[in-house]
Length: 272
Image 1 (cartoon, helix red, strand yellow):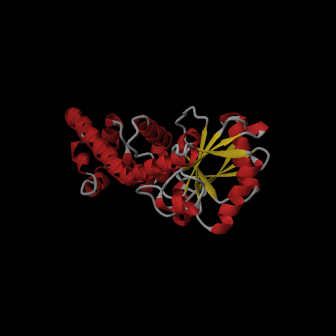
Image 2 (image 1 turned 60 degrees about the horizontal axis):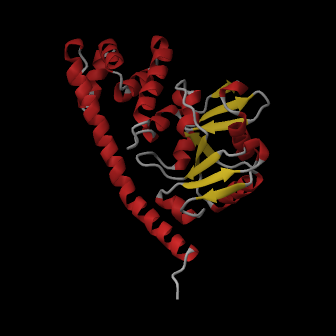
Image 3 (image 1 turned 180 degrees about the vertical axis):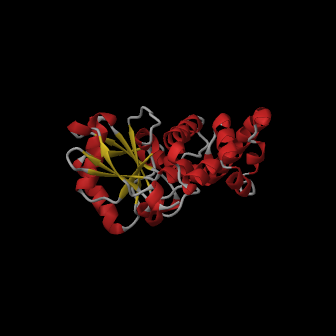
């Protein structure tokens, strides 16, 4: 997707859209020049699909200089590691998330989850090039995953992500369908999850829908008299993605269990 269409756009951010403690986390990252992209529920808020969350999910550039800037920002936030794995490049590189809890007064109790790699999503540098940029009223800059990248990142095994993904796509479609670009139309036909809107989009842009059917076969079912078949196909598409995500995380979860076990052994050594 082109950055000119979906990313690297500067929006004026109203202060009330984001809780002040999360704004503190993001402004600290910006102040320390950490190359990080906001993702997860808080990013969904800015794209019109509100979600309450006390977590701040960040995707970071994995290089030594950036990780040092991140360490400094976390120290400023009085962030302590929670759970496993520990904060280390080797764990981030393999796809693990590293978790922190902030104790600094203005960010108290906010959880910060750090990752550098996502399933099915491009490397960080490409994501950075097509990011969305927000600027606060005081001039603080925040960086988000572009909408298409956020959609891809939301295709997880977690049940709660799929209704959010549907609302995220609905909001974007309803906001832009009257003056849409060819690129946005392709995006909607590939990603929309609301049967009625997918039927509407396929009817509006029949030639494009026919072209994309090879990539997303369920588009052939996007007809008013086949809505049940379309719903079934969307459900099957979701199940397949959730299974792919489970398979991806299976070895990572095994590593986490080994880490938890080793930490427990160190903390509670055997008697004798």
